Length: 88
Image (cartoon, rainbow, N blue to C red; front, side):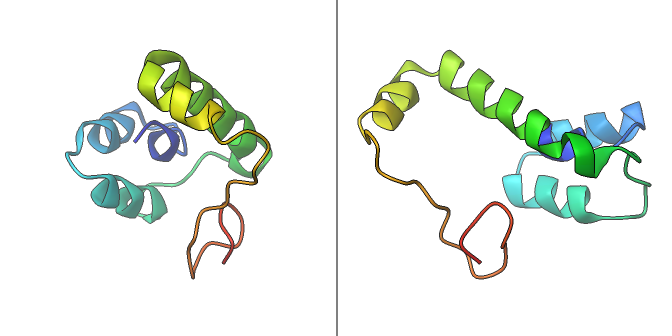
């Protein structure tokens, strides 16, 4: 939700994305271009994702332990559509 919301400068739309109940709906809203995305998005999206992931694992001990238990294994999102964040 956070990552998708950060695509926009419109604070009301950010809240709409943030408060939606479903990750799928948040992703759909994030992909919508009914509201323009921020002009610097391509240059900051990695830093936004990095901040989101750091916050997630700092806040959830069990997830942090699970992540650390993977050691040096590569972690790749299995997806048929996303060539940027996943294996595509």
